[in-house]
Length: 399
Image (tube, rainbow, N blue to C red; front, top):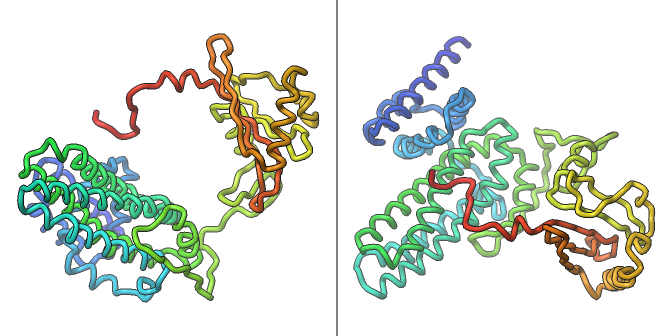
């Protein structure tokens, strides 16, 4: 046991050393020997654990991200021996199979739709490069599924470093493609070639990491039930490949991470679980007011945010919605509800000025999955601050 602990500590020190040298300007070729000596023959899972320990100790994810190219340079030719192929990657409809199929599509776009046209500076080639980049930008769908469906399951098992690092590289690839698309007509041909090849290299390395580091880790960790959930939700985000078949394995496993069961004070929804206080406080934190009227025209609920546009008291609960409006507008409300019930309308918007505020009032018909009318949702918001927004403010952008 002590030997194992010492090995982990030693490998973490090696990772820090490699990151430091990369930060100081050394190339991948210059540092990969140090990395290889410490990690040759070590599973991808153990390497991710070492990286996770460094992040837990305060090392920024951007620094860990520097290791991505070192991983690719060292493990080509060795990871295949560590992780033997599994049948799951050959099952049509299995998310692992779909990921691999999409990578072949990405490679085909690069080799057939982009790279051949980078050789010679002609007007026709420039147009073809633009088309190739447009097709390549669809890689975003592939990355979105990975980030929004696969990464959450990894995090449930405490595997946090690889998702953060890989997401950062995904964003770099997206930005490289977008930047080249936006500046294609303003760059010299040699600059187009260099930037395109740089993006292609980054994409190719990501394909390698997905199939030789990410997938083996997932196949070792996720249960069949979790893979099924990923497959079931993948269609909502879309695919790069056509005709992804439904995957319905006979054998089922209980998920290793148990969901909270329904109990007092717990509200179980199709997409998550709330404790009652969490749900109440979340609804009261929304930057707009909501009120729900049921199918019998009875007020059932309203949120209690700190800055309500219109006053509400608990006395309104159980009241007929027609009695909650001035006589001059009640006929409009009644007609709107009638249109919702009949299916003539699904929503209606109104907007009014109130002193220094500009109020948008929106009404939505709430229907069951089968289309049955369940009630009306009113959403009220002061949109003046939104109208005054200009420019951009990104979560991630130039410093």
